[in-house]
Image (cartoon, rainbow over all chains, first blue to last red; front, side, top):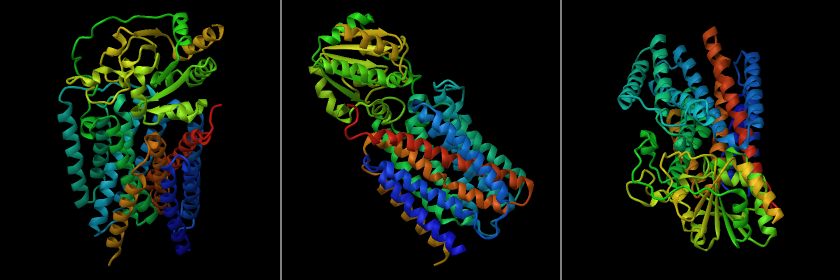
Length: 452
Length: 97
């Protein structure tokens, strides 16, 4: 039996790697997750046959509870809320790794095997940080708490103290066998996860969630060592490495260093530089006319479109314009929305053809020829301040909407973007502001255009 | 070569594998891939099951039980979220009109 179990774990590890490989290309991605899913089910089932286990009833009950709740929640949630769902499920994985370590440490399972005990403790530390950190990230994205960076006096000192404290306790736990010390260790590690995530603003959350994803992977790998389970070692380590790389790629796409993300506080800097000009509103009819007489239109969707669920209306508008012989393109900033690829997924859901979605490098040279660029709920990714040294946004690649002949900005109110910087585009001479909920505004534009 | 060393070699090779598998990924797949790797570390549920299976005291059972719930949620939720994201890519080739 033992060999059969190991064989299934071996196949599982292979299918996970194969699945991940397939997921890294758009054409094979769907089959990739299916293969990995088959492997997951097989590994879970075969674990019931590991010799010497009891509490099977509790296992089944726990699996049913966890699976049903998570499955229903994941199926019900809006596509726009996917990022925080990734965050919370990732946190749960970290919590599970922490729970494994907690039981093993309390039992004093390791005896003289200090190396394994060290790995279990490290996994517990990383997993616990990922657990509470991901919960805070979830709360911020879900709107349960402010997504602004949360700061308090001597924050860095407090964070450092708690972090160092957790490390010291980890050492104590390594060389002793004491329930209370283990408890304090976990409390400090969990607390550090909270403190570490509080000062990070919503705009940086994708990078942080990706980092915690790598953390959980690593924690799972370490606990795999601790309990001698090769499937956990391989899957956890692969995800740990892949997640780390993914985190760096994302940070690079946002032109932020990982360090500056973690230090946090992005978006609370003082505004640098005065903005010249004024906000010039436009009404729906005029906007519709402006679009009707354009020959090239570029849409720039952002998080506001996602929040308003306006992707379907946007496609309708694009269809109407195209039926009038107007060329329509979509400019997708790598980090528009809350996560890289967020806009692509939403627009694909609405049925926008892939060929009409253009990356930053491909679309930027086309803005000067565009008669109208329509910004739908995007802000920081179109802020020309990113070109100016000294701005908190400096260096971030932007979509050059300000170079279009005209720009219409559809926006709910006069608030700032995540970075908390005034957007100079909104004050430019050729920019008009169209206030309102993106879905309603786009719906009205479609109606008006049909009449023209 | 004892098993600790064998495990370390597994660790080394797995780390390289993860790195290689992900490099050169188009930006649009970053989010689905993060979600997919999030699903894969849901394998932690297997570890939690083994721990719960060996648990003896009520405290150990409670922690193990909690661990299995969390791990199962990680796996099931991670899969459902990833599937929904990748569904969007399915209609890709001639999507829309």
